[in-house]
Image 1 (cartoon, one colour):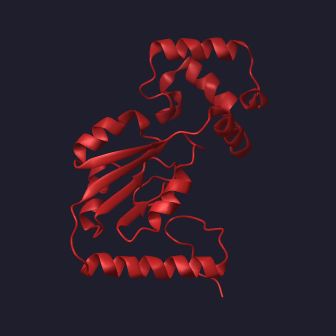
Image 2: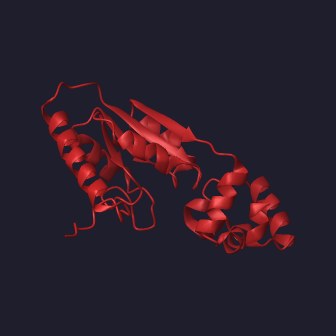
Length: 189
């Protein structure tokens, strides 16, 4: 027996864990619909890729007071993991019965302040992980940083959200790093 792929993307858990999670989500949804109303708060979970945001999202998802949107959820994110336009997120938040509407915001780090203003009352939780650990994990997971660095050194707008808000000083520093001909392995040192 196999379950259809959940709307939150591929789930590598065993069947028992997926069933427990699905049952808990159903219970949580009913409790939120018919339970006491608490004040609504929008929560943005932010951090660099590989910083531990998935771990926090998993913990928050088990709370009976949250409605959690991972970057793999196509209702809230594009296939490139960028948050959909604010009107779409507002509609999701309005339809949510949960007191805490939690959404991951990795590609929107430069806009956290404006998102919090727009979705007031709002809070942000910014996850920080030691850069050695984040870098090691990112290089093992993606292995494409040198080409991204080269593109951004030439044109801040070349890699969409990655260069958004980049200062000229940061781009200048990036150009200096690219001139040293780094390898993916250099990121692990």
